[in-house]
Image: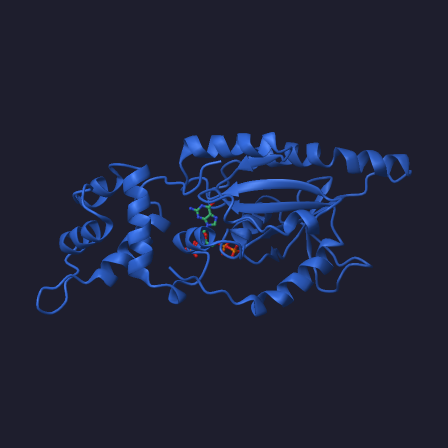
Length: 279
Ligand code: G4P
C-alpha cells in the first residue's frame, strides 16, 4: 500500500513551531492513544530540548484500556510523564494540574535561584493533525475562560489562557507534521483518520484494518456485523457489504461502500475500543 506525503505543506508548520516553542516552558504533546508511536512526531524531542514535557494520550476513550495502561507504563519507563485523557468529556483532566507541577519543578527551582518569583509556566499544546488539539484547548478553556492579554515580547495576536494560578496556555496549538518514517506508521495514521483518505485506496485500507482487528480483537467484527471472521479480509469485507446491503446494480458487492463503513465505525469507536500498537 502506497502512502503519499506532501512534505512541502509542512515546512511552514515547522518554522512556525520553532518560533513559538521559544516562548514557552512546557510542551504538552498530544498523541492518539490508539497509535501512540505512529502519532508521535520524531522531531519533537529535539525541538523541545530544555523544556518541560507532558505527554497526553488523547482519545483514550476509543483505545483499549489494557493497552492504555501498558503505554502509560512505557512512557514512565522512558522518563516521560504521561496521562490518558478524553478531551471531549474532560476525562483525566483532574490529574493534569498535578502533573504540570511535577514536570515544571526544575523550572520553578531555577527561577527561584535567579530571584524570579511566581513567573507563570507558559504551556503550548502540540500534535499532528486531528489528534484533538483544538478540542483539548477548548475543554481546558471551558473551565477557566480567563484570557490573558497580549504581553510584550510575545508574538502579537497570541492569546494566553490562564489555567490556574501558575499556568498559562497558548490558545493556538502547534501543528506537527506526521512521521515520514515507514509504511506501517503511514497506514496506522490513515486508519485513525490523521492523513487524508483520498490519497489511499479505501478498500485496501479497510482490508488491512480488518486483518488487524480479526487477528488482535477476535469477535469485534462478528459483534458489529455478524460476519464470519474465519474468512480472509476480502471475504469479511464482502460479508459486511452483504449484511449492510452495499450492493451495486446487478447485485455485485460494493466493496468501496463497505470499506467506508468499516473505517467510519473504527474511527468512531463502534467496533469497540481498539489500539493499533503495543509498546
Ligand atoms: P486537531 O485540532 O488536533 O486537528 O483535532 P480536533 O480537536 O479538531 O479533533 C479532531 C476530531 O477528534 C474531532 O472529531 C474531535 O471531536 C475528536 N476528538 C478530540 N478529542 C477526542 C477524544 O478525546 N475522544 C474522542 N472520542 N474524540 C476526540 P470530528 O468528528 O472531526 O468533529 P466533531 O464531530 O467532534 O465535531
